[in-house]
Length: 82
Image (cartoon, rainbow, N blue to C red; front, side):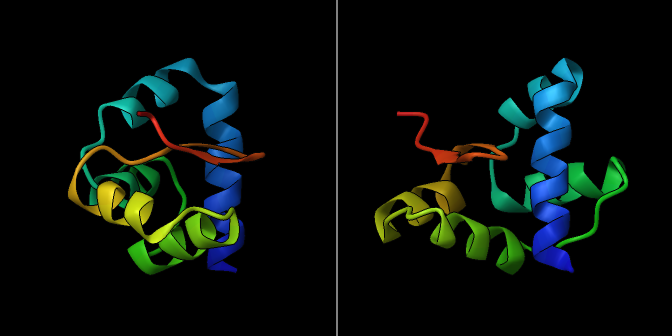
């Protein structure tokens, strides 16, 4: 259920410019999880990283997400902001 919550959160981001702006200011996966919780979604950093991995992100991209700006994610996938 948690992976589904991640996907639902990113679908909401696509439809809510305010939420999308807040997501762009997130500096870590923990910030994304906190923002999601504030918006009524419940998932862990591990759930978020599992979705990133399923979308085909490399370990380097996952490391970058956990150490800096997270990738941009939509319901269609996650993309490096680089």
